[in-house]
Length: 371
Image 1 (tube, helix red, strand yellow):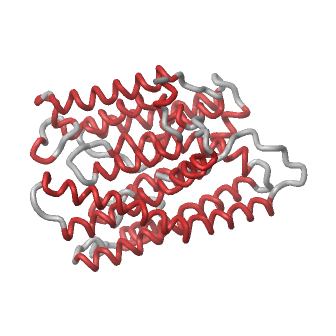
Image 2 (cartoon, helix red, strand yellow):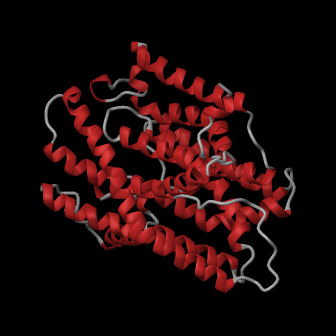
Image 3 (cartoon, helix red, strand yellow):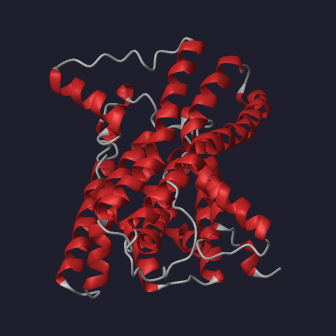
């Protein structure tokens, strides 16, 4: 078998990442953060590519970009929020029973749940839909992305503006690692994750295409580290919580960063993988776009599933598998009813804003998917 056959197309890879988050929320295994960091890298690539393909050729590209992101993110988000509200009422949960005290706390709570910005800085008990924390970081990236793209295209690799951006990313990640090291928790601010996003931006800008050996080798090494840490009793608490929780449990984010860096070449290799069949290309595109729905709706499906599932964790596995399968048709329905109509509106809006002498796009296909 050729190594190139082991590189997944972009849509399939993103669905796999979304289901790793599902596994993280189902079993005491810390793999969700790896997926989120890789989503940030992929977002950097696709936002860079999409900017030149769709927005740079319009008047007021920055405003059009933010408007396009609004149509992509908020309709599905509000749908997921409404379904989560109905599900909590159905199962008698209390996710919506948090009552903020004080004007500033209340403003932060309601503003973040309406507009997403600031969501990751909310206390855990105040987050109605915890996965939205990464969507908040993604929204912060959207605000900064056009400026980052401008810097990458106007200035050289060792220019002062680029070095300043790198410095912000390095300092941000260092602060994040320090928070983890001192067991404070994770941060909810974009600079702490900037280097992940820049991996995708730099890949798109430079045209880097990782070799199959580098991509597969990085994945195998990350898998070996994950399996090895789970097998060795002294390191098991690094990735497995619950009854295996131990002194290394607070450092699972550090392990996730290392594994995400190792898998990064594979993630960047998927963005250029083109399925040969036209039908498969369409399917892969839809899978990639549905990643957003899977990411947001899986917790609602789990909330209902846990209401009916009982027994030991081993006995629960077949039922949890059914919940995982049920998420896909649920995501497909809302993709068809909401996402695709919004996408047609977004495309029409951009066509109406194109410059008369717009140059042809220089980047290929596909819509980036929020985490």
